[in-house]
Length: 339
Image (cartoon, rainbow, N blue to C red; front, side, top):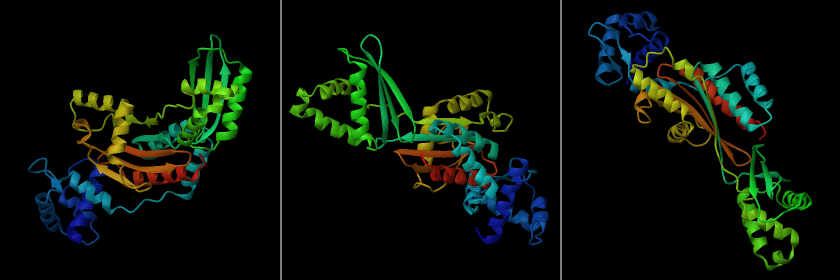
């Protein structure tokens, strides 16, 4: 496209985002800073139709931008800026959350408030997560509650049954041994070093290591690396004309309810290098019912063996500038806060 065609196309996209109605050549001519005539705009629109950027629902109607047009429009947008007071509010609210789970939930809600679309935040733990401390508590019937806290302030616990009794004093000694020797280590490195220590012959003669071997065999420090994902604002899709039958609309909401499907969606379309915004216009490849939806997101590496995915999912004619700005600055807020 030449400069004039691009200006007219992007003006059509902006007009369509605002109204949701086919755009007439007269409307664009009145908005044009170059004082273009309606006939000139009409000729350019005809060329854009031939190039696949516009469609014409009816013979006498105006034009509607296609996915190709939205992609061109999004690529032309500079990264939006939020007011400094808004940035401070984002960082301030997230810093008040004492756990990563609370930050995930709050950030998705804030994205929804800022964009009037669906806010999605996910944190994905990796095997390089760092141990903060463990706690071991004796229960009845030879059972032990094992609590593992990682440096990202995520807490996992599990109850295991032992073949023999281990006193609370012994559990406290094991806890102190692990916390003293391995706090600040990655879980992978802890497993490797513990395995080496327990395989040494001296372990058989050390009462503490013998009991530690028993707990290790029951899965001590084997924590599930379960992603934390929260989504807010699906109700914002209600009332939008997504050209879906009742059955397909039901399929769409069912897809949004499945966390596994949403994680797959984020993984598939947020493949850019960490910190780089990704914009996917039209999600039919993910699910037919998502044809008229767009995804804007970013992947952020965090300390402590976590990565975060922050995204906004909304209609194809969403306010992209606002959504891009919200996602970018939410990602910066996540990156700047201590884990």
